[in-house]
Length: 447
Image 1 (cartoon, one colour):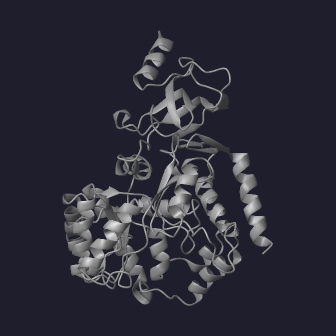
Image 2 (spheres, rainbow, N blue to C red):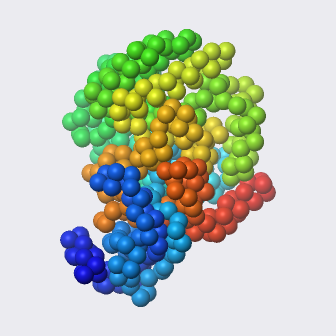
Image 3 (spheres, one colour):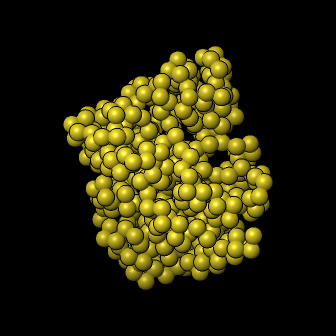
């Protein structure tokens, strides 16, 4: 009867485990405890499950012994480990396909792999470069290894936008070219921003990113910025760089955000570095820096010696950072849509591995492990729901999965070193990940 049930589930989704063909690889996770992140399970972990993947889709799941396993399937024994959806980097960057002077040619491929090594199976790239749309297709079609990419086009800023007419024309061009969203940078006037917003709504394309000074947080939210990245604009609104902000003011900003359905991507770890609130000696000792080219690493160290950032607040950085943490807490308490992101590969944010630097800030702001995981899985799947189904361990969803050693609801740091990562149905074991990381480190030592 149980096997009949799993067969019926397959039929409902137009899938058949028994019909799996040799040219569409089948992988089976056996005896795993599954944190499905399906809302109906309310954070419950399903014990001793079998999950079947065909191609890049989850096609069946159920209790151990109740799901039919094709004879030719690759079998991964969970041995009581925990399976959950892959994480997303909602404010990430992908290097240009042509490397800069002094940067090794391999850097792009290494960045893509590092995301996977850190459990990141989806990246919203927040600054487009020529040929990146081809890169996105290459990954989707299996010609290159990396996370699924959703890409913003080249920046809208004071250097690329002259007036309303040109702003609207540029939005149309980005939509026609196939970018997934528009990237907003500082320097735009309110008039230019309004033109971008109006045309973006007409074209059905999101815009997101920074909040230009002349626009301000409230206008950016009202005009429909899909996300406010880096919590940009909030503290500028309430003079929160130099003095504590009251709970009432932060609560009002949070409620205003929720009322307009705008998401936030906090990137707290990076911003602590940019404003001067980070622990410089600790950052210099990050073990993941071995996976970064020496020229890039040198630039990061130079920043610590001489911070060149428009966001640097120096002597008041500790107050500034505390306000940011309290703002994140207020947004969380108000029920704002929080999306996981680190702005890798910016200062000391090594792709994928930067999650271990960002998540502690989220914990410190009062977020539960479940809600942190939700911010990088279900919330992201909902964000991109029109493009694909992913973000949950559910039949029909893209097979982006993490296998970890401990219960992530009890020890969220287990996410930092996955037993293995599956991206679009392709399995990367811990041994394969470690071998690749060793190769990357050796290449950058040899520079």
